[in-house]
Amino acid sequence: MSQERIIPPSELILINDRVYHLNLHPEQVAETIIVVGDPDRVPKVSAYFDKIDFQVGSRELVTHTGSIGGKRLSVMSSGMGTDNVELLMTELDALVNVDLKTRKVKKDLTKLEIIRIGTSGCLQPDIPLDALLVSKAALGLDTLMHFYEWTPDQVSDEVTTQMQVELTLPYQPYFAEASAKLFNKFDSLRSGVTITCPGFYAPQGRNIRLKPRVDDMLDVLAVSDTALGRFTNFEMETAGYYAMARLLGHEMVSLNALIANRARKEFSADPGKAVDNLIRKVFEVIT
Image (cartoon, rainbow, N blue to C red; front, top):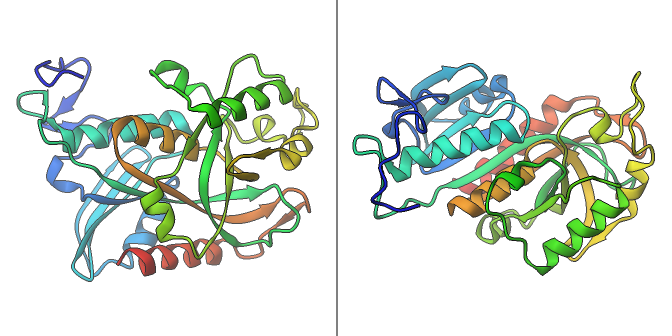
């Protein structure tokens, strides 16, 4: 984007000098950000802060900004799905990289560090319930990147071409990797490749009253492999985060507590404890 271009009010909407959906001023967001899906998880994360300076909410988008051990942090919720991820990442980037008074992109860009804390279901029978996993990469089964200038590398193109054929999809998925810088900080955790789905039921192979079109989806994915490893888990945001972070120039990593094992048809006896273990691990690493 040209730094001379003035972004019109209809494109970047401001209400009382706050970005529209996040309802935030630039000074209300830190450069290290923890993102969660569930707005009720935000206070569970900020409970570990030494102090909270700002608490702002707008629909499912809740932000707490404060500090722990002298490090300034924000935690914010996105809600579910890559549509919400696109909204959050775009407005978050605008807060730090667009001058909201002149409506021009700043000359010196800020690179945010963003860490997702989430939950997901596990594909592989050998991974225990409540395991903590860091996603090395993610396959996006949604169509978000078809609306951006997304150029896959050879590894990505091979993976997405293969999965389009195996899942008989009418479009090519996308494949995006974690920030190496942030991924390496969590190298003590189990790692894998995540599948990001555009829904919770049929897009993740669940059969309630409506039968999924691809009825052997779990089996196909469980035995599929990529140059970065096997598919390990299902959720609804990671690929969108990784792709938007790459396009916008931010560091991004996604972590999950695996609270369901789809292969063994098991669910965690205490998912809250698994998530709290993941929150504690994140603070152990970043503070």
